[in-house]
Image (cartoon, rainbow, N blue to C red):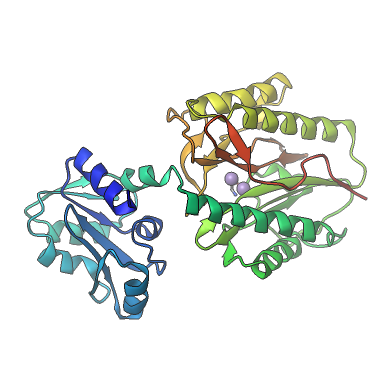
Length: 353
Ligand code: GLY
Ligand code: MN
Ligand code: MN
C-alpha cells in the first residue's frame, strides 16, 4: 500500500474527509517533495501540493501522486476554493502558527476543523525498507566521522573545532548536513546533557562527550560517544561502566511488544542501583527518521508498544554537576525477534593520552 493509501485509510478511521499538512517532514513523507515550503491538502479522492513559484518544477518531479498548484506564499487562501466540500478537516495543531490557524479557519468556515497532530507521525513510526536503508547510511556516515575525528583530537583543541571536524567528515561522506546542533561538551560541561559545542579548550583529566549525527537524503542519525582525556580515576571508570551497562541492558530490552516505558525502566534500574538515579534526568531514547526526535519514545511515560521497523535511540547518561558526565547513544532497529544495533562505533572506554 502506498503512503497516500495508508494516509487515507487512517483518515477514514479518524472520520475526516480532508487533512492539511504543513510540517515539512510529514509533507516529504507523504509526497516525496523535499523543498519544505509546501502545504498538502489531501482528501479521500484527491491530493494537492500547494507551493510557490520557486518550487513548482521540483514539486512536479518529486511528487507525481499530487496535483501541484502554484499559490504564491499564502497557501491557505487557495484552500477556500478547493476545500469547500469537506466537512471534517484534520490539521497539525501542534505545529500551525496562530496566524495560519486564523487563515485556515477562514478557508473552512463551513467545516469542522480537528487538531489531529499525530496522524502522519503515527504512519511514520514504522519505517519501510527504503527508509531503513537511508537511516543505515546516515548511521554509517556518523560512525565513519567518529573514527576519522578521533584520530585528530588533541589536547588544547576547542569543542567547536572537534564539532567542525565531525561535520566536515560527514559532509565529505555524503551528508547534506548535521542532524542537530552538535553537543561537544568537555570537563564540567559534560554534565550538561545538551551542552552544545563551545570555545572551551579540552584538557587532560576530562570527559569529552560528543553527540552528533548526519542527515542523509532527509534521514537522520544520532550517536553519542564519551571518551576520557588522560588518566581516569576510579569514579570516572565507575560512572562510565554504569552508563555502558545500562545502555547494553536497554538495548537487550528492545523488542516488539514492549512499551517504551518498560524498556526505559530496565536501563534506569541499573543506574538507580549504582546510586546515580538522581543524575539520569532524561528519557532513555526516542525514535529517529526524517526528524531527529520522533515518537514513540523510550521514557517513563511512553505507553506505546514497539513494533518491527521502528528505529529508536538508546542513550542513558549520568550527569554530575560540577564534576562531569557520560552519555552513550546508539541507534537500533526493532526486528521481528528483538533488535539490530545499527551504530558500529566502539563503546569500550576510550582513553586518549
Ligand atoms: N542529540 C540529542 C539527542 O540525542 O537526543
Ligand atoms: Mn544524540
Ligand atoms: Mn538522541
